[in-house]
Image 1 (spheres, rainbow over the protein chains, first blue to last red):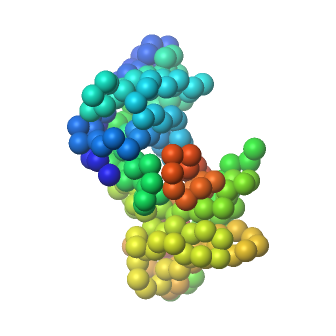
Image 2 (cartoon, each protein chain N blue to C red):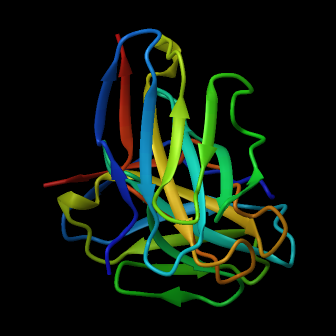
Image 3 (cartoon, each protein chain N blue to C red):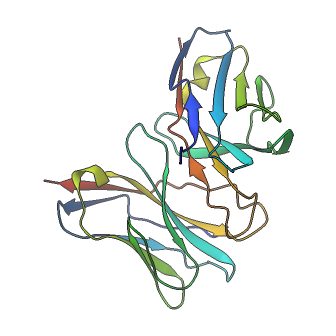
Length: 112
Length: 116
C-alpha cells in the first residue's frame, strides 16, 4: 500500500472548518483513501473513504485532487469532541487490504 | 445497530497469568481482525480471522498469543503467561467482507490490558 504523509499536529477554533491534509503521491489506480480518527482512550472510528470523486457524509467531506496524489479531510464545523488523532490510510481494493497500516496521523486540537 | 463489542474494557493481570479478550463483531460481519496499540505507539495488525479459520496471523507474536473465532460465540484473543511488555490496548475490528471495496473495517472500543 502507498505511504501517506500527514502533519503531526494542527489546531482549529471551535465552530470553524478543520482541513486536514494528506499526501499520497505513490497511490496507484486501485487504491482507496480512507480516513479514521482515534479519540483519546477510544477505538479508531471510521470517517469516510473515496477513490477518485469527492465524498461527503454526515461526519465529513473528502476532497481528492485530480491526480489523486493528495487529499483533504474537511470537518465543516469542528467541535471540542472532534479533538483526536486523524489517520489517512491508503488501501488496496483487494488482496491483503485488511492490514490497515496506521501511521502517526495528525493530532487535531479544537480550541474553544 | 450495535457496533463491535469488546470485553473486558480493562483487565489487570499479574505476570505469568493468562489474559482472555473477547470480541463480538457487528451484526452481519463474519470477518474479525485484532490490532494492538502499545503505549505511545501506533496501531499494529495482529491477526485476521473468519469463522473457524485463521486467515493471516503474521502480526501475532509466535509464542504465548493465540486467536480463535468459533462457529458460535465471540472471537477470543488469548495471551498466556503475560509479561509487562504485553501491556497495551487491544482493538478488535470487523467487516462484512474480507477484501474488496465494500469491506470497510469498524473497530471496537478496545480492551486495555495492564500487566503488573
